[in-house]
Length: 267
Image (cartoon, rainbow, N blue to C red):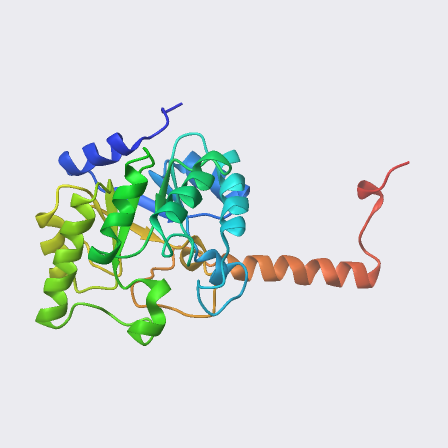
């Protein structure tokens, strides 16, 4: 069995130019499968709101929901680094709230690190959490909790002024003590520039191949979410058809009295 990955291992991967694999998980079965496959980081994303709970965005997700899902993932993982999203309004009000809520995700849920969105304006909050020995993964570029300000899920940093701001955000996140950062929805060239400008690993999603690692939502790569289909998603399997067929066959056999048979009954 491989040892439990730590933030030090993730930092070393950048130094050794080894790509970092990250997937989201929200429950025990998926966590167990991806951990056994050798995933480096499991992210319990607030994307759970969209792909599991059916919300239109991540904003309604609560801290208690993140704790619940993180606990389930932790029980299914032995090797991956476990990072949990801090949901909307769990860290924006005050640094004291941010520390308390990050602490709950570690103490009650079992996360190894937390992730929060924002660049320069969140640097002090990142530092406050890091100062109580909780590792933080940053998240800049397209930040889903800011969709109302951004006018939706739109690529960020295409204009020179906005690109410079993203680079400044990246450096602020690094200087605040984050151990890594997600780059979402930015042009490939800009993501490459950011990756070369900071010493901590960058994890891309819709940011091209030059990041130190990649993250995708598990439901997206398995064809389990038909609400949207971003350009950056690659579907590696389509298990929705297999699941649908299994359910259809079950219903058909129940209706026809073909299930359960004697093989599925007790004497």
